[in-house]
Length: 40
Image (cartoon, rainbow, N blue to C red; front, top):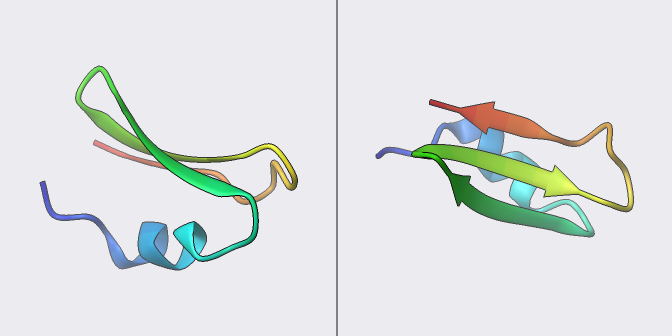
């Protein structure tokens, strides 16, 4: 799966993690939950 540019920029934020769950790509951030995203 191609990862969208918006998720790439989120992954560079401090505290971000990229995880794949149920075939979807998520960016989760415990430090700042405002920076979260989903694709798929």
